[in-house]
Image (cartoon, rainbow, N blue to C red; front, top):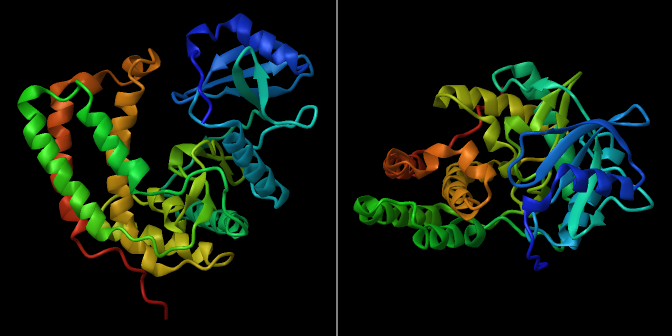
Length: 328
């Protein structure tokens, strides 16, 4: 991983404009900051009359090789007529450098919010996820990581232990229940799945709806089990999730074969995301954007709620996994 000593603090409007000028893209208006915390993302209109989005990558998070792998995967999906927001190549490259910053240019793709409770839309999403995984299974990422417990549980646990966020009166119960949750995750986790190239963070907020779904922000792309790109589409009570899952996988299986044994990973994956999310906020807290966006993170009530959430997730891990409805 590259070692970089600078932050987003020096990413002023002038630096943004100069960076774009360096690749012969001249902003006419805009530089509207979009809702992104890990990176800095701006929409603007250029002199050519087109609207673009530029993403400035968080220093030291990914190497150039890892960003290039994300870009090449996205372009490969686009070449197979899969609706993704793919980076634009300029002078043969999609990753650009300016004064130590790394950035990319994308077309601005508008759309409305994807409706997870709309079964017609869910069917479309399932079909395209099958096509994404059909491409993703051709070869794994070489430089990007594979989803696992080290990155999503063990490292986050250490980050939380070294932080000052958890109130003193709560630390004993917090870490006792967190360790119980981790033990349950370990007992339910398995690695007997083929590692596909995944979107990696395929939640409803990363899908726009136009004439169909548009998949955006593959910044968390990595190798992992197919179900990682599916489980965040499920919401509501168990019977709701079963109906959603049935719709999603019937469409998915038109293009890729889903192994139903991966359904047992849904609750472990949910637990991984829960632990990783807390540590992500703690790790990024020195970025001024995070205290502004997540002021409740420093509140004792939040951490009390997490202790309860650990107990609830332990219960969910020991419930019968979701199963597909029988086909007649």
